[in-house]
Length: 355
Image 1 (cartoon, rainbow, N blue to C red):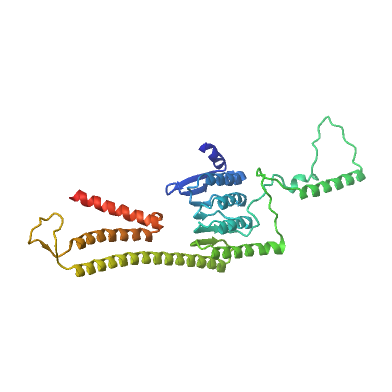
Image 2: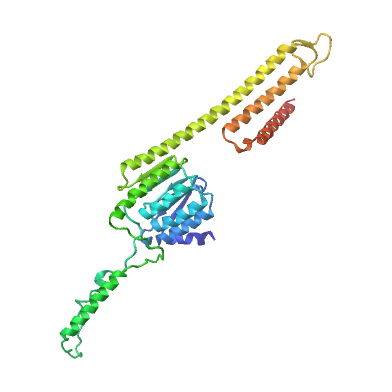
């Protein structure tokens, strides 16, 4: 079943490499002659990612998958929202527009790199024939020895035939498009002013999308057609997001550490205050023989309280340490109580084994 799913990728000349325990997928082009079905490889890659939700990083910068394949892949990524890291192959205006949708929809994405080229689309319709293939003006039939000489052609008839041939040339030129075995959508090609403004508008939308995507902490948009100021804007926006994430993480860690220290400090103050109130009383500690001379400087209740609060303090400290690391097991009050109870039971079991 897996081999059948990978067959279109192999036919398209694509090589797959899994890294980091299968969470990172690298796609490379190892057969440049397979370009004619490269977009079919893009469809197969999209189906593969849709079936393997464990993939978190995708590097297709060396795959040579063009805009049609990028389109199929982006539609799948918007549905699964599974990628955290994406390195795209070079794209034109159409591919950039589909990648824009990924940036806007995929909130888990934190790393993005792409190369943009100033072309309406990198999908080029493969031409099987050219205009010269319809030019028959220089054609001369081979004469055989047994052929009779033909009568000279009537000038009027020759002129009519030439007019018909010219009409056929125009008709063929207007419909001179071949699908190139793809059968995909042929995107309209903007002309003139519309084409000149297409890329700046798309890049401006990409800058806005990067600024609004708070999880994007690394963005690299390269290409001769990408202005340096826009590259700098995207880089600064990503760096600002990264600095904000680091600040929030530091605040959480500091808050968790301070809470644990404060809890231990309060418990020690309570034990100290209890000891000062009770002072010296008669009584024997567990394991001691009772006689008239056995006086303890620590009350039994204080002793039990100290042992209990020590274990409880350690449990609270460990609980806060796990919370500072955003452990989901202690994210609510029930989880905290379960963790503290488990820690105290383990502590009690260790003391019993020591005895």
